[in-house]
Length: 361
Picture 1 (tube, rainbow, N blue to C red):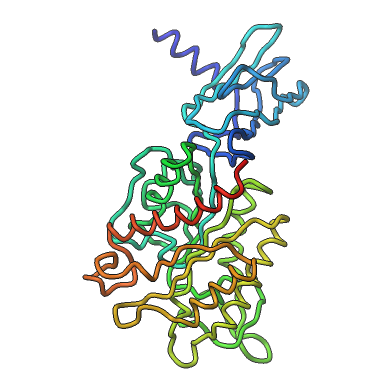
Picture 2 (picture 1 turned 45 degrees about the horizontal axis):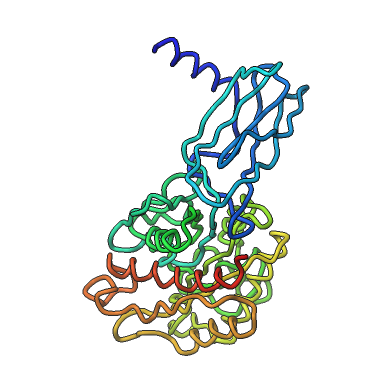
């Protein structure tokens, strides 16, 4: 047994695998199929690389001189699959490795302010074990706190309940990558140098513009786009945007009109498409709730809805409806309780699911 274990370790050390990773989810191209991208380097000589997930062994393009391999592995939508890779020489396997959890399903980027990150009252866990998150250290099960957010939040999120609800409907793994930051205005998410009239309440990520007004320093936009670029064109289904509380009913000098909100969010969406090189869908939630005494801003809600009506964005959930015991501090807080996080996740899954039903073939 010890000799067998040592031989297995030696075989695996002969292959460096860059993709796929444990718990990685690849975006499916149709209801029934997708592609796992396989890439890496063989540390010993061979003449062929083969891989498999949901079917038979299939060849992967392999350069014998550099020992680099990279190519697609078509597979059925689903998982988790036990991914296998082997290096062959003269018809014999000289090195191989296994990854227990690789999937083809639905992938989403999530951005916005605190209710898109880890500010909920109770940390959530994926009940199904079929929801994975991408963060700075790679892929893992999407148990809270979500990795990769651009703030230091460490509590609960809507993401595990959202992913569980989608898995239960579609029976494919769900991948997420969160890039939000608490207390942020849409103004702070603009690309570097984008100008606007009034300073947000939180002063990070903006500075005075030459000649008057304010401009974004691009930090949040760049962080979001770094995540987007990791997936590449068609590499995720959509971006889910939950933001608006920090633009709703603000104090004089920091307020923003509904028209300006819609205009700036449109600029943000357009800039993200240009930098990404493809027009990935944005879902925009209605989000403007502060407390029982300030349950929302009609102006910001109308601005968010206007993006759906104009076709700039897809319709996200109305999260302002989640009041009472869905909110922290006995209903007085802006962040969600355990009950509220689960309801929030189901609302997002319902809107995303309705869209998927219309596009999946």
